[in-house]
Picture 1 (cartoon, rainbow, N blue to C red):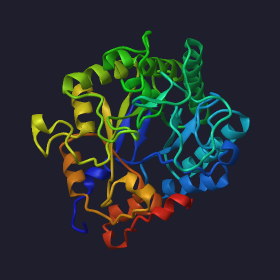
Picture 2: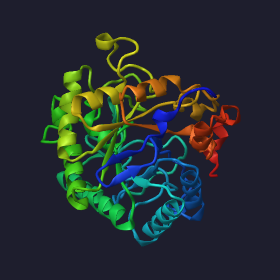
Picture 3: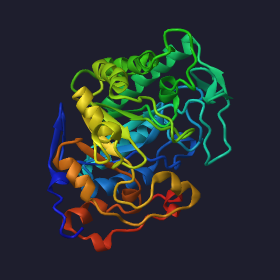
Length: 373
């Protein structure tokens, strides 16, 4: 890796009023270090260290909207209320002081339980149909009023992100959480306007969330939407089996106001439709960009030998080469690349990659998930 030309990673990127000094995004990673939901100075320092060491764009850990059961861990930060927003104000001020750019990831966990804690919210968990997976009841089905209030809460969070001075906002629509539960037929069995037999029909809730957030922030503030085919409830499931189905899913979301699609894979190098373009074909972010014309972020085990889900069973990872990533960036398959565990373990990861110090890259130790540094 010491002789690898990494220029493609360090080209500036501009979209609307956002200009990044490089193509590297710090992926959102749940940390659960916010007692009572309030981000403290330790969280501000954690993000400031990455900003000071040349991360192009930082996306925060998931931070939840103003709904009674929007989080599944009492130490997940809130993105509402005076105290929590004051904490986020300190975070963005310190990131900007270090020369960084940042956006909060706006989230609702739906009916998914955390496997990190036994804590549950006092209010019943909510989801499209009171399901957490195929034929797995948990919580209650959302009423029309609950859906309207949830859409409004996403909009309020977006408005607060802009008011506090964040550079972008990301909507969490992946990994089997609330918005993704509307996409997924196994968890959305509604018979009203938010359900339906097709993925396009089941995308209505997400499109309305996007439209509400776009109205709240205006035209120039970039909105990112994180999406995944896989779910933590079922790694093998896929929402879109063909490019046409992917078009039905993604095009309406871009038309609703999404600027950047953040396309999550467990391993970013895997082709999305190998039956069409082969084993070296476009990945999820590549196909999303081709289909919609929107900018895309790719993500999934960048710079490490093992994938993320293994971390929760205590698996570590070694640094891995970036040749495949550079090749895909050079051919403009996608625009940005999100890096998670490598930057979590090593705040200096970006600067080491830029200077060619591959020998100094840190291994990822699963114990890092229990620390904030």
